[in-house]
Length: 115
Length: 257
Image (cartoon, rainbow over all chains, first blue to last red):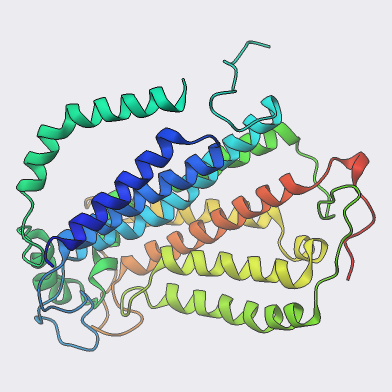
């Protein structure tokens, strides 16, 4: 059981990378990128987990009770928000590519030319 | 590059990093028994030192506050980039009319959707404000609260239609909210500097543990993040909505009720 989180993280990352490599559509590619990102979240949260302890929020239980690592949670939290906006930026790029080239297939995109 | 070639390159790259990856995976701590002491020291010390009960917020806005300034500006830069890219292709013009694809009928929203959104929209907004306000006490904070507030705006769009939504949500207001959020965060960091202390030193009164108004300067930084995240997500939303709109010559009559 104890290797399951690492296996899940590796599986998610592998699936994401495979999707990126074989992608035939930029929107699909950006989706795969976010799957890779989720692998990082699983890995980070797994790294911070302490056996038999609660959340790092000392409201219901007093300070001093065993709690999981809050540093990785803070990292994941900010990464989710920033990652969502970065996906929006990438999708905006995809929109522009589609406007200029009429396709979203990475193979059909012609190199940029000066105008 | 054909997909087959790309896959072959991936396998080659995978083989190249395999020894290093195997070494790292072998050195991972057993699950449930982390080796990092930083987080545990934070858990042990910060409730006492900063009078806050949410350690994640304490890390984001106090011990690693400087990192959060960077993340805040990453957010700002990504939103600015999205706006630039989309507006660059479309121009500055904007109308309060929804997008229309020629020849496709516009089906009116059902009453159930309108009712549900009118009930859920305001409550989602209030929930977002609640999550953001209780950053230092219970799970939540500016990042989560800001996203919930922005999703409330999306519910208003679904319930009221594009035209009404654009009457409610003004782009200059969103820009101001987003910029003011980032400015507030930096101002909160510079306040201690003006007093001769280090950047982001917690100089305000800390309050009592478990109280909504605990954490001192963290509350100001949290408010800044809330504004910036809510404004940023709403701006991205509006810019993508504008993309769905047909050019002026193709727009039909008002997207009415």
